[in-house]
Amino acid sequence: MPDMDQRTLTAIIKEQTDRALWEVKNVIDCVPDDLWDKKYCDMPCWKHIYHMLHSLDLWYINPRDRKFGEPSVHEKDLNNLDVVSAKKLSREEINDYFWDVKKKIQTYTAELTETELLEFPADCEYCRFTLILAQFRHLHSHMGMIIGFIIDDEGLWPRVLGLEMPFPDEGYSKYL
Image (tube, rainbow, N blue to C red; front, side, top):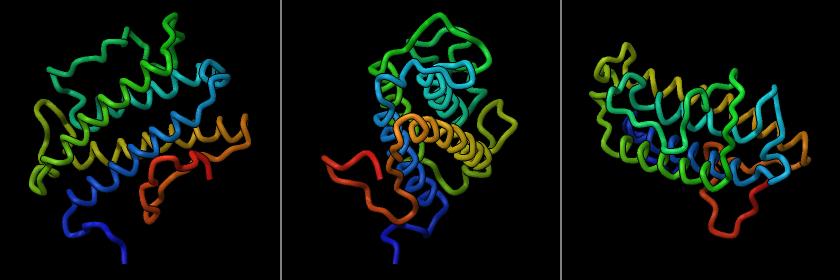
C-alpha cells in the first residue's frame, strides 16, 4: 500500500510535484561540467534546463499574471530555444533559479484547494488543473531530452523516483 495521501486531488498534485521537483534537481546535478555548454539542437544544455525551469515558473501557476517577475538572470529570449543568446548561465545561477521556482511552486501547492483546481486564475483562459497538467507534460518532455543527453554522452542514467521509490537520504547515488 502506497504511503501517500490520495484522498484529494490537491494532495496528489502536491506529492507528484514534490517528486517531479526532486527529479529536476537530480537531473541538473547529473549534468557534468563538460556538457553544460555542449549544444543540442543548436542550444547549450544549460539553456534547455533554463527553458524548462522558466516554463515551470511561468506556466504552472498563471502565465498571464501581470505581477510575474522574471528572474534576475533573465533577458529577452533567454528562455526561447529558437533564439541563440549571447548570455550564458552558470550552474550556480541555474541552481539559484531552481530553488526559487521550487519554493514558489511548493507554496502554491500547499495552499491550493480542490475548488480552485477548476477555477481560472486572473486574466487566464486555462483553469489551474489544466495549467498544472500541461506543465507536467512539458516538464517531463524536457526532462526526457536532458536525461537522453546525459545517457548518450556519459552512459549514465540519472535517478528518478517514479511513483513508489522513497525520497533518497543524503549521500545517495545520482544515477541508477
